[in-house]
Image 1 (spheres, one colour):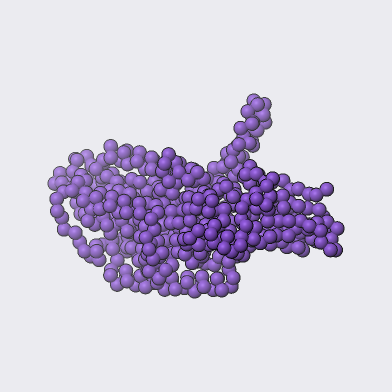
Image 2 (cartoon, rainbow, N blue to C red; image 1 turned 30 degrees about the vertical axis):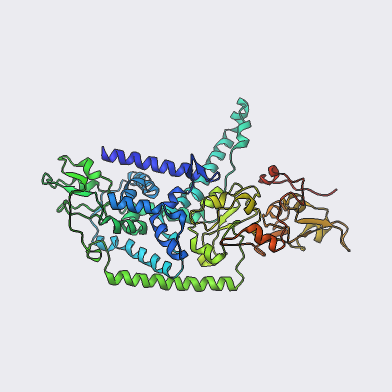
Length: 540
């Protein structure tokens, strides 16, 4: 019964995770924040406040997971974690397809189990030095990235291809009108890398079930440290006959046939599979009275104090190298990417961003994309605005609403409209009006802020466009609509307004900006802002 109940709990948790992710554009699902699971991540809750040098209110729910661990052990890992549920489901299918037999016990088992603590030490060492490396191994960030950037686009693409294949039948039945309301498929730049990473994890499932959770997950290491003193633990009575059923079925692989009563609270996932398979009812989970708790560095699965300190130092050294990389990037003027509106100043943004992809999933136009190395190595996987993929709508605040660490501030619409992201720049050599004397006014027609004017200039037969810097928000509608390839008008992060606090409107007005949609170009409506493909327009 316990195993079946756990599978139901895992399915429900994963289902809620997917529903919340699907509701990212609206910011909530029946009152639950769309980024709820990211807020529960114990690794992010521990590392990000250290990097940010202060509390991060959005991550306070992670304290609930730690309190839950003190009561019932690693219940989150065994029952609620979406990554664990995904690995259980997908790994089980892979093992059935390959028909992998049960592997022999690994000789390096204690060493492998200590890896996750060393990974945790490296991340914390970097955090102390002000560099955020948690996104490389945060289970909730990795899972959100998989579902948001890989599985969701693949699902939309599959639906689109299937409907296209049966479109003649649908037209014959006269049920094609609703097809035009289906969301368009999206493509994200780092989706291939994310997919390969998860394929590697599934390959490791052939070696050991939940290989990631057993040996590599630093969030599991955090909970493992707290679970050493959990109130409810596994107890085995004298009725145990060492039949080996619990050992064969334990997903964490911590029960040995020769010593099935040996406790290992820091590695136990509290899944209670052993309770459900025991034919003698010898296993139970309860308080069980007082018990001796081994010291931290005297457990088989925890590395030595020397190794732990060495990895803290390695993390600090890695942080120093990442800091130098970031400094070089900024010195070279690597503000070459357009950050989402409301983003904190670049150093603080990089300290807080989990690279989870939640803001990219929430963006209604698909304009937010993950970077590769455009912002340096320290900025890898962070979001940037790619106007060719989609522009930033003046009536949308979705990205800030779903950011759990507030790397992107959750701004009200009245403030967000003043959070300038950059300035459009015209490449005259590629512009139809400037270079070829053709009467094009696409950029003017599609600018919600009226930042583009066309006028006659000496030596030109057709009016040519010019950008008013003080009116330009950097939304990218002009770049998206430009008929030239590459675009003759591009948004650059020049003049971007990025604050940690204070009022964006006050700062923008003090800088002389006039960022009020429709004031300078009143005929542009909100319906037009929401169009993904604004039609090009030309002067006759």
